[in-house]
Image (cartoon, rainbow over the protein chains, first blue to last red):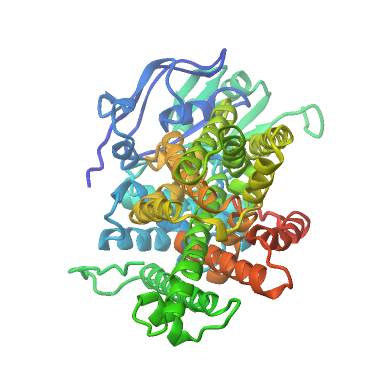
Length: 267
Length: 353
């Protein structure tokens, strides 16, 4: 499997109806790295991810995979390179973890060719990587939030794509499960070189876990780069309209944003 | 059901937990389908033994094969009982498969063709055909197919505007069902008494009125569909995860929805054309099959449960009561409380996701 796909966003504009949400964005996703897209609500970060995931037709511009627009690829071919975990995925009632993860093999199976040894190996690897092997027979609905999210990530992994997109994978999770999910994504990135692009709300976790940050503001890229290089008080105040202090995380050495509201902080 | 022969992987002989579980699950589905099929076969025989005079199993088998020494047994079995027993199987299977396809496509146990107006579409078209044009047999079947597919297409067109959520389909479908029901009643109110009577009988639905020509068309429809079941299931498995996931898995949700819905609509239309709209079979078969399987789903198992429901309902309709009834009366009698149960108790959707 080749690990060196390039993913480039080229003058991309996206929107819904009359509204333009992503406005002329150009950037290169660093291959084999973890990229976090951050920004205030309605800054266009989820929309940008949806554009990369082929869920939205570009108004203008394109998402280029290895130099050619992804909209030119067949859906199956694109799905073998780029996988997505949507923000609030839905599954039928009573589905088991094993059934769910098996469905990640869709783009690798033909009309009549089903369940090859490759499929079985990929599903088993995905289960093992996410620590969900013991849950295969369990119903998704009866799992904890963290287990459920790991099962969904396992489904996306079974798709065996080199690029994995995640739309707010830690939302609705307790802090311990947020860290667990992000650690898992780093494992994947280290072990398989998977390029990871995720929308994250939690700024400090984004600074710690991402190699590359893209900060969106009003549909455009405000700042991008290595967290340690780009995150400072001025940048956060600009992008999130929030006064803050940025210190160094004592354990990871990455930027740690301390928000300054009107109360409970000393001036 | 086919059992897949797999080539053992040359490198790693130790199969993981998933493969073993997957195989066990498939084996259970095959076993349950075999049990359901055996039950259906038994009821098929029983339904040909019962009647104004009882035939034993030997008389039924030799009669059906035409090798009986008693000409009366040959006549009773082949001319009177066999068509009805076959109709129960074909109609039940088509309704069960169609119902589960709709329910899975729209992700809701209420979303069966009889609730969504697809059956009403077939019904209204057929009533119009009977009353205005005096249609019967194959031409009536054709009109019913047109009515059902037109209703499904209208539902797609109206519901697909601005998103493809299951709830929109269901609301639009219920609206269409009400509208088409009224249209059918309006046509009936304008009809001659004899036509109205015939149309009303048709609207209640009975496997007893299926004509050989209609049954042949239905059998051809089912035979054409069976090889496609694995194809339809594959598409459903992606669609069931929502449009975003389906598209990122490489599926084309809009196109796949149309394919699955067309197959399901044609099936329900052919069944309706043969026997009239037998109520609630399509609604009940899928959930009962899912409960029988426990984990996972099977379109074939749903079809077989549909067969069993129609067989039991028809045996009850013909023999359990002092006056023989139409099959649809009995299924309606079972189905109405089921819907109440579904809405009051069983529809507490678990939030999986």
